[in-house]
Length: 579
Image (cartoon, rainbow, N blue to C red; front, side):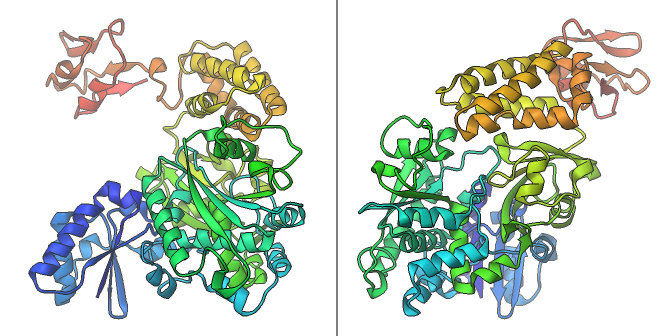
């Protein structure tokens, strides 16, 4: 019997350490030799702490596990009396997916290279290259056949970068893994780094072999301490086994990897800003050309790929570019990982074939929306992405189709919104982020986003005019057109798409109302005397003394109300309403 406990950041934050301690203590008390094994995240973040028990040919997932539930679960497995109450239907969540990047996540022990090789497929592709004497150009050609494009958001053909670096002059060339995942709500890269670190190392090493590079660097945000720890351990293990270092697997190819901890600036996701940060300078973009492939890190030829892109590489080389290209649509081949969050029933990490519809992802794999509320929109691509309305949920998730909506695929962050979500406030939230993360180098981004944010802050308070909204749209178009780097060019996307698809909500805010009743300044609370039981709960909870007694019970003095919603939340009889 094997007991696997999801111990990535999501599992640990939910209490995985306590569950592991309880499992080990119980097994020891009954004289069993087994112990809990720390695996990564299989993607079912909604059910953490997640425990998988493999008993002979059978495998069961237990969700929402607490230390108190451990005894009944383990005892039931040992005695054959299974506790059905905590079993999670993993098949329902996983069956609609096509897992390539996530193929090993939650299935292997990331800190144990032997398990990664035996239970997973770590370093099989690298060994294939040297055993079959595959040339660097043949590796690049296989990536070209696969149609793999950059999964960090730009969607640039991966083979083109590799070939450009290979053809550039220079005695020292570099491969950089961009692991500076800064999008709010995105956790794709973090999960891969924590759950299957060797796939990224192997992908980088293959990229180095193909591009003629000998130096690898992982630019990893310091806010991911568990990912940093597991990557450092994985690099050490790979060096010990001869998968990194001098004369890899007895060949004449040498490749090393170092880890650089980033300070967490969102703009450092842009290639030239990332390079500046790695060199110890302030992370600010510079004009191109020259491109990093010609003059990058330390002014030497450099290829930058993100985590997900590199994690695809070993599977492609081992299984063939044609096998990868069979999945997907048009120019978007293979799969894409999405971090699905928001109002959905089963949020988590999902990998689907390119071309899957938004509807199939939200209502199929992720089980629809909570409380059976209607889908209003999905925010795709993070702060640089856009809002896609429910009326377009039939659209295919691929680069070209999503771009036509005004949104972008981005790195894969997806927030599902229901009818309680305010699109004006959402645009304000994301613009607050991008404005604060602007490096300040170019005026349109530095000043333009600030002026846009000021208008949105007026709008959510009901103080904006129609002229303000027109000015907001003009500013958004100007910032998009004139900013230097991808941050400024894409920062207006949430504003432009919400204006395009939800203009009526902006009009409502101008009139002093928020249709979703979520903008605090535009909401008023009322007490229905016919429903009021005169219990006084609202009176006791109100911090502003805005609840007053009258002949029919209680009423709200709106001149004193601070709109904290304590009356609404405390009433058990539905007497307090919002409007």
